[in-house]
Image (cartoon, rainbow, N blue to C red; front, side, top):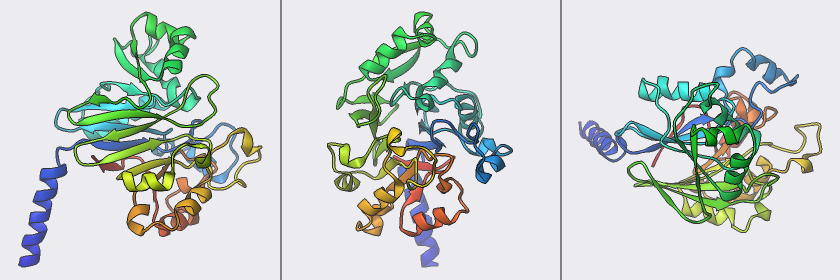
Length: 304
C-alpha cells in the first residue's frame, strides 16, 4: 500500500512538473541525404525503400503542449512528412511552426524551405532565424530569394552568443562550431527550458577543432544531441577527410570515463545511411547503448 501511494505521488509530481512543460521532439535522425539514400546498395538501405516513413532527415521540434505551438530546428527535404508526423502524433491538426532555426547551408538543413513557397504551401511571413551569412545566402540566391521577396518567409538574423525568447519558457542561443562553411556559418544551438537545458550539434568537423571542451560541456547540460554521422572510418568508400565529422567511436572514447549518469545525457543524431546505429536491432546499437549512451529515434521526447 505504501509503495502504491509513493508511486501515485511520483506520477502526480511528474505531471505537475513536466505534464505541460515544453519538450524536444525528435523528427528525424538521418544525415542530409536521408534514408533510403540515393544509389545505396547496402542491404539496410534497400530494406528501407519500403519503410521510409520511419526514417527522416535530422530535425527537432520544441513543442509547447499547453499553448499548442512549436518551433522547428532545420528545414529538411523530409519537411512535409515531418510536419505531418507532428500533426498525427502531437497536435491532431496541421500547424506551422512559430519560427524555424537553421544551422547551416548544407542540403539536409535548409532545402525544405522550398515547401513554403508559391509552388507548394504559399506560406505568409513565416519567421526563419539564421546567422548573418546564412541570411545573405537566402536573400541573394534563387530560388530562396523568391521566398523572401514575396513574403513566404521573413529572415531574422541571429548572432552568436545572443539568446532569443521562444514559446512560454524557452530561450535559444546559437553557438559557432567548425564545419565546412562553403556558403554560411555553422551553428549549434543551446535550447533552455524552465527545468532543463539541451545542446544541439548535428554537424561539426572534429571535437578537437572546436574552442570548447565537449567533456566539460556534458556537466553543463541535461541533453546533448551530437553529430554521429559515421561510426568509424570504414563505413564508406570515399575520402572521409572531404566530409569531416567526429566518428562516433572517437566521441565514445573521449567520453568513456564519464559516469553512467553523465553518459546518459548523450543522444547521438544525424547518422549516415551506412551507420547501423540507425537500426535499433543492430549489434552496433547494442554496443553503443551498453556503454551508456543514447541514440535518437523518431518520436522521442526530451522534457525541458
